[in-house]
Image 1 (cartoon, helix red, strand yellow):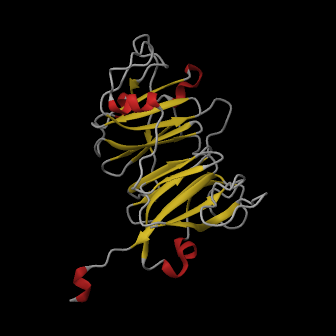
Image 2 (cartoon, rainbow, N blue to C red):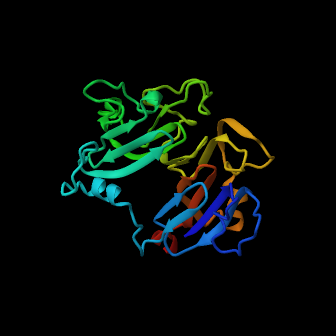
Image 3 (cartoon, one colour):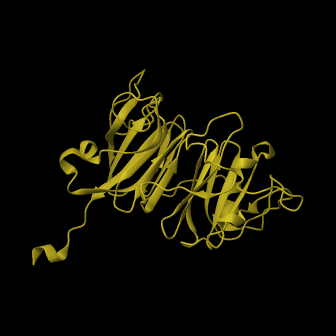
Length: 278
């Protein structure tokens, strides 16, 4: 598998195979940064990036480990354990968790209720993990993945529909004026969405056809678009032919990831069709 990256590189967080330099430059467009037999998980942070290659397990803080395992042996008076959690994501002012049954719970700062995707009540206050009921019983099935960053959250259904919500009072959302405090479908050229990633103020999606679309801030080159654009206000397709070069016909993008100000593409060789030899 090959990992491509673009964007902020002030701490050499995109330099996996090249020697580090004292004052590294940002990377303005997608380039190959790592080749590994397997890349199962990318966890980009502002100043560093960790990669899970399928051979070692990433360490987790005890409180998170207890949360994911629903471990009731550790007393907790302010943070209840959640049932069957398969994914936990963080944004600037809170968290969201996905259960094995596709239910989404959010909690966070009550001053930023738009990011909760629900209305806080006495029974389900902002700081307590509570269901986002608007994501239940969706037309294309349960939620299978969450992504979050900055003041925006995204959820992907089993039927490849994308829902987003969030916002910050006084700031124009990079997804446009239609972004609200309740989950709403986001349509990108009528494409089915296979994967989604959210940064501090930018976003990537991967379609089931293997296309990559980006939107948002590009001040550090995190969208990987040529021309030195500072931002993009409409969904724009990445020219994967230029990114992959001679490997374009033999490779396919299998996943996307985003740090606060950078982006990643996971690329692998296409599987050969046994019928081709007949």
